[in-house]
Amino acid sequence: MKISLKEYRLPMFITYLLTTIYYSVCCYLIQNNSVVNYPLEVWHWGGEYVTYFLPLIAVAPFSFVLYAKLKEGFINYASIRKSRRLIMTKEIVQAMLAASITVFCIFVTVLILVLSFSEPNATNNNLQNYPFGEMQVNSPMLFGVIWSAWLAFASSLFILFSSLLATNLDNYFVITLLPFAYFHCENLVTALLRIPQISLATSITLNRLKPSAMTNYIYVIGIVSFIIVIVVTNIGLKYRKGLLYDNY
Image (cartoon, rainbow, N blue to C red; front, side, top):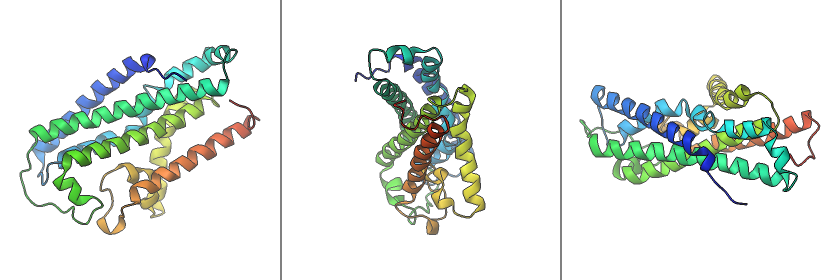
């Protein structure tokens, strides 16, 4: 199975360019209008404005490729020669790679810019009680790269969710907006139920809760819950269409 990102080069470049500019502007405004206590703080707070739209950033530019191939019958035509399951797996993996690479490059680029040009204007930080707090302060580059990879992984799950929806639904706007809607509805519901620890938003938002509510594993819980939702949703949609035992 040969993986190629040729079809995704343009959406990857446009998404990278626009989001990096937006992220950089957010960091610039924060740097000039806030007290900065540690090198990574500007990148952290600026990243929250990007994380809010992460499901759209990871899905909207890349989901159209698979949707168009399904809509135009390319998948059905190609499945004459190869397994439909193999073709769909390849297409989904390509979309996941495109989204994750783009998001990773966005966050790492801005990380380098922030650490190069942003300087703390105070010395008071309160990260000691947060998970990986010392690493955020003492090894900002290493932590930033690791966190960027984590967000890239989360982005691959968003596009996976959208791609699986595309195999079962015939509405581009639904498959594009549903991951974004789920992200924010789940965040609202868990907040109302006072269990934000299991929220996907908590998993991809750095230091979101009070230190007393956070553990070293809190960033994993929401991701695991989302994976379960993806699996259950895919099975449910296939069952609804009578395709539970069909190989796509």
